[in-house]
Image 1 (cartoon, rainbow, N blue to C red):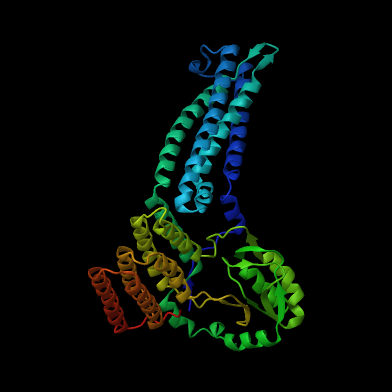
Image 2 (cartoon, one colour; image 1 turned 135 degrees about the vertical axis):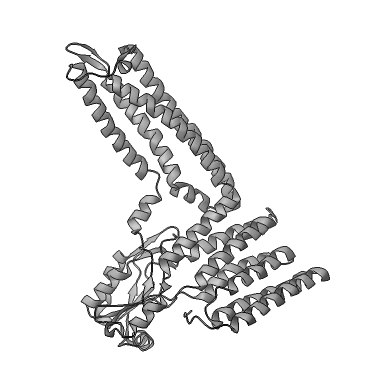
Length: 463
């Protein structure tokens, strides 16, 4: 059975994306190289090796050039300081409702990085041009082309400033924040969970290289009984696991590795994170695991789609708190959660076993769990929404929307169990009988949808 999986980006590239220095540094290098080119042209024009257009040379004395470049550099650095200070203040206030990860999203936004980089690059270019004004043997040297380019960059900075203000104003609006998290969830699901191609599944049965000579369940039992323990080298959230790297190492030492944690889990230094069979390979695997595991102070979306679900849930329960009391924000989060779970319901959860070229199992990763994902999406919201009929009804609607995307009865049993817990909670917390009647009607509609879906053919995708 083959799968269609998007390429997973390097964790190093992801780390660079979550900085405010990488893009500005690249643009500073570009500005420096641009100045070097324009300076050489200005020098060639000064010595009459080439002729610049008249409009580049008219009315610019050495003192005037100094004043122009000083004004540009001072204005740019002032705008950068004021605008970004005000922006960070606004984001700090917004993060009180959206959660502390709002600031991280701001840093990760490419538009924000490019805006900062363009301003800083213009400042560097202006300073370099300012320093090039000097006295040559034939008189005062004025870099006319460089000054013109600096003025063009200044006009470009004005356009970028307008874009930045509009971008920030739009990006901190609640629907945009929630939709952005939902897009991250979709991207993470496409990266982590493969789409099964049923046509290729038929061909796979005829391919002897795809036969499974080992039973993962038997291997797990052997590893549990006779495997050596591998300890974590440092504490932090597991952000990235080099599965291919570990599988190659396991083949090299002729061992089988079972991982106890997956990206998104918090690991503690000195505590077990994996087991390896035979026991003698544990030390080698422990050294390799320290390089193949990337830990950090926060979670990322690279191999952890559940993190996006948790972000949506966090916004929803903040909105439902008495201090905020924003019901419609919670309803919006539930809408996007249903969209994400619908996408997840159609994916394969069985690709946790990694084999070598001979088909032998070398690495068994920590399993994903469809029930845990559904519970993570609804449990906290259900607990925070006690006595709130509007949110309770929307939870039933969200579950109903996911039903059509389910691929097995076990998935639908998970949705039914969640619906029953929501109904039980509402019967205890909602006092108005009319509200209870509406809630029960939506629950019955969910049950009817589940029964209709059970009557349809299964897609045979494992949970």
